[in-house]
Each structure stands twice: as C-alpha cells, then as structure tokens.
Amino acid sequence: MCRVRRLSSPSSAARRGRVHDAPARAAAWLAPALALALIAASGSPSRAQNTLSALQTDVDQIARRARPSVVTVFAVNIESTAKSAAANAAAATSAVPAAPRAHTRVGSGVAVDEDLVLTTASVAMAAERVLVATANGLEVEATVVGVDPVFNVALLRVPSLRLPYLKFAEGRAARVGDWIVSLGTSYNTQPTQSLGNVAQRHREPGQSLLQLTNTVYPGNSGAAALNIRGELVGLVQGELGSPDLAGGDGAGRSSGGASFAMPVETLRPVFESLKKNGSVAHGYLGVSTLAASLESDREGGPSTPIGALVEGIVAAGPANRAGLRPGDLIVAFADERVETPEQLARWVLATPPGRTMTLVWVRRDTEHHAQITLAASPERVPQWLAGGETAPDGPKRVAELSREIERLRQEMERIKTGEGDRR
Image 1 (cartoon, one colour):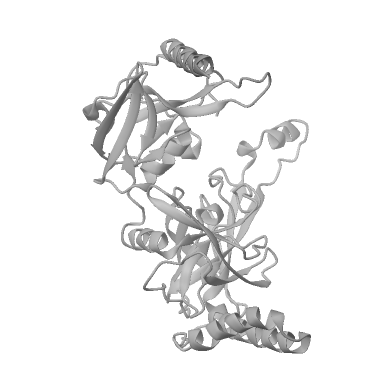
Image 2 (image 1 turned 180 degrees about the vertical axis):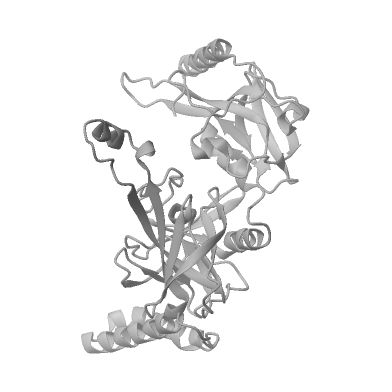
C-alpha cells in the first residue's frame, strides 16, 4: 500500500426456487443474428427490419432467463444529529430536537450463488442496513459479507432466499467487439436492459476494466454484464471515481461519462476472497508520497504531473529494503509510468501481496531500478481511501521536499533549454 497525503503546495494533483442454467446453444442462434443484422443493413429496409426484430427477440430471451438473478440493493445510513452541523445549529434554536435522517443509496446486484449477491462498494459501503428486492417483488434483509473499496466490490448474503444465480463466464476473456447484454435496475426498482459491446479494455497493474457501449442508467452500479451465452462476464461499475466512504445520496462515485464493467478475471478472485475471508488482501509498499509536477510554459496553463515524490519511508517495509529514501521520485511501477501518488497507490493496492514488481525512481538525476516484493497491507480499508490521516512512521520533511521539487523543475528547464539550443 502507498499512503497518500495531499499538501496545498507543491502538490497537484427471486422468489424461492431455481432456474436451469442458460443453454450453451444460445450462442448458436444469437451470433449469426448479430452478423445478419450488419449484413441486412445493405439489403432492403423490410429485410433489415425483420433481422433486427429477430435480434431483439434473441436478446430478450437472454434477459428473460437472467432477470430473476438480478436484484435491487438498498443501502440505508442513518444520519444522527451529531453528524450534521446544520442539524446542530437548528437544534440550538428549537426546543424540539431534530429527528435523525435516513439516506438511502440504490444500486443493482447479481446473484452468484443461492444466497450470495455481488454489488459494488459504492452502494454497500458503510451501510447500517441493507435490503435486497427481487425481480418478483420480494424484499428481504441482507448482511454484508465483505466490502472492498479498492476493487469497488461488495458481497451480500440473503439467507432467507434461494436465488437463481448466474455462472461466471469461462474460457477466454472478453475482447473488444464482443457483444454484451447489461441487466440492472433503476432507482425506482424498474428493470433496465441494454445491448452493446466491448469498446476498449483498460489495463493497469493489478486489474483491468471493460469500457462498454451499453447505456448505463442511474441505479445500474452493480448490474450484470452478460455474454451471448447468458454468462456473467463483468460487474457494471458505471464510473471510475473512488467510492464515497462517508455515505450520502446516490451511487457514491463521480461519473466517468462512459460505461465501465469489472471483467470476470478480476472480479472472480475478489469474490472468492470476500466469500472466504470477508476481505481482500492488498499490496503494501511502505511509503508516503506527495504529488510532483512541472509548471506549464504558458501562463495559467496546466501543470504536468511527473511522479510520486517520496515523503516518508516505513521502517522494515519493502520500499526501505529496496533502498528508497525521502526525496526520491517514483516514476514507474510494473513497467507503467507513474504520474500521481493516487495512481501509484491504486496500482500497489490492486497487486496481491508477495508479488514481485519492478519499481523505478530518480534520485539526483540518477535512475534507479529494483525488483520489490510487496508486503500485505495492514489496513483493511486503506486510510487514504477513507479520507483519514495518513502520516507514516518517520519525519516530515516538507521543506526539503519542496526544495527537491524546485530542483527537479530547474533541471527540466535546463534540459528543455539545451534541446532548444541544439535545434
């Protein structure tokens, strides 16, 4: 785990029962239908319309079989008067104490076992009460088995139900161009359905995300992403921001402007860990870092992030054993360029403990490389993600770090000036 601390300067920064498994032959009639839909576009309008109607029927059949496995999740938080400054101010001028207020986040969920439901941490994090509503109108209490804000996944148990569940997709990972059917529920518990495909795969150390062309509706966080065989290939995230651990209304993540899903190859190990242990083990590097950036050549232009500047080292941690020191600038992790402390922290946390990764840092104009074996993070929920204090063991050398950033800035200016002279 990397601990991140921001500074104002120089930082920038179903009713009971079972259903039969979806038959494998679904792909045999849906895949040709999808191909015909494209070919029919060059034919007569009536022929194209007939082909598209057949495609819609095929998609509806997939959705109809999977729909009982998709639920609505309500996560309730009670805000006491002690938590609300506004309520305290109002109580000071009123003889009647303010009543606690309930905040409800609404999302989707998908059954992956008879009594287990996967949803997102955005929905279930820090909830005092969780309810699950099935497609046939049943509403029951659920218990939280585990929540992981790093991967944005939560596992719920509904012991009073036996849900028809979806199988995880086997075989090859979803590829760009694969057709995806997304099934979820909206804020008002109405079912939603969308057909699209995989537009891109975003890969980074420890995990990847599928960018979909499917429409994601409000309340779809935790919805199911299915392939043409009706198997679960991903869990809809809907956006890329970090979960809001403090609660509040809505889904708790800032919109990324596109539809995203966690693919099954990342999702399944997280599910197995939550089911077995109630938590997920995360990597730990043992550093606290600050943002480092270069100012723009243009007045008022955006600054350019250049890495994660080491502020402190945890004694006996992996970074300390590798020889890192305060003032070093971490510029690469697992062969990926590091631009911000948050990026480095996310990558380290997403990497399993015990895995050896390549780390690159710069110290006084000299590039250093090391193979670092990550330890296990001692924190169940990382403090920096929860918005708490993140002071590591060791001294705070803010003034020295400020000078180091200035030295790096001057060095970059010197390099740019030298390049300009050669031209």
